[in-house]
Amino acid sequence: MLIFERSEEGRRNSAQRVISGGQQGQDERPLTGIPETMKRATAARLPELSELQTVRHYTRLSQKNFSIDTHFYPLGSCTMKYNPRGANTLAMQTGFLNRHPAGDAALGQGVMACLYDLQEILREVTGMEATSLTPAAGAQGEFAGVAMIRAYHDARGDSERSEILVPDAAHGTNPASAVMCGYKVREIPTDKSGDVDVDALRSIVGPQTAGIMLTNPSTLGVFERRIEEIAEIMHQAGGLLYYDGANLNAILGKTRPGDMGFDVIHINVHKTFSTPHGGGGPGAGPVVANKRLAPYLPIPMVGKSAEDGCEYYWVEEQERPESIGRLSAWSGNIGVLLRAYVYAKMLGSVGMERVADYSVLNASYLMRRLEQAGFTLAIPGRRATHEFIVTLKKESKDLGISAMDFAKRLLDYGHHAPTTYFPLLVPECLLIEPTETEDRETMDAFVEAMVTILREAKESPEKVKGAPWTLPVRRLDDVRAARELDLNWYNR
Ligand SMILES: *Cc1c(COP(=O)(O)O)cnc(C)c1O
Image (cartoon, rainbow, N blue to C red):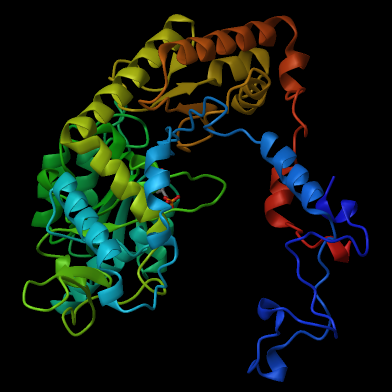
């Protein structure tokens, strides 16, 4: 039931204040000074409910969700790991919550110290020169990084470079970011073992190449073994290397994109640095660059100065004339950044290595168990990084059961589905990422569910094809939901 269907005229929530002709309390006075043209002509039609009805409605809704707090959530490429409550508690301190973004820097020294420290941590973890925290998502970080590559070439008068190279396994945001920055996208093939086809790369690279976008480990869940050779090929041709940091969880504290030869990277802190995400937000996608690209980082950044009365200050255009500029109002998604900062401090360098150790160990364990249970790996013979791919091509052909059917049936067994049909080049695939925070029993239960579904697919396929059976909604028309999204209750 929608909240509007529960509404009854005149019902009041004690927190809702009505402005009437009579006595008005201190905080019930209408705002003054708003131009008439900007005021609405009719009152907003809000649902009218009691406070208790409202609480029950939203609590029930929340209980219909799959979430990391209630279910295993092995969504590949998304790193849905446990978000420690301690990080949340510290980031929710009233001093942080009540700070206005327009407030004077002198009044924000505490939060700026945290952000400065986070810049330093991310720089160190990636082996780079400087960090800007402002992009509000991984995708916006990509846009920033590619815009910086463009600014670099332009500043050198090297403006003939028109192409960005992207592997065929790449996340869709990579080509999209390149196109948003005015580049043509050239696809590079992957070889049989899951690596970039270096011979093909060699034949494609030239004076028209602005750069390449890679993630390592790749979205196929394997480590790009010839990355140094790729970096050399690119740099020799005058192109730059962009690192998509979505898979940083696998290498945290082990190896660094800067040491592999990358020039600029984004970090999905909501993935690797564990802030609650999913369902479209919230997030943050700090960009980190080496010496060559650092001057182009988006502003503002947090600077530290010993001279002034204030230790920390906002670094703006005057100090960074070559910056690509601002990407968000104010200074980024600070709530997410603070959680990431506390999480990073909780881990320390030893904890970060442990993240990589256990995320890889868990993925390897789950991969082997599924392989032993008869499932086909997309890239057999390679070590799993923090994620791996099962292909259900055979099951789909022999039994008529698709990866989507498996995904929907998993929901009945209490597991969020892995990522389906991505990367695009692997047919009928599940991209599975258990993360380091899961225990062995949970992974064993997942294997058991997969085995059960495989048996059902043979013995009673309608059970799988009709799933989910136990959830509030059955199969949704997701194309229609995306193309004809209608969120307006009153216009029905
Ligand atoms: C999640 C992801 C992105 C995009 O990041 P957002 O924060 O969702 O914008 C880019 N590349 C890869 C490989 C990803 O997994």
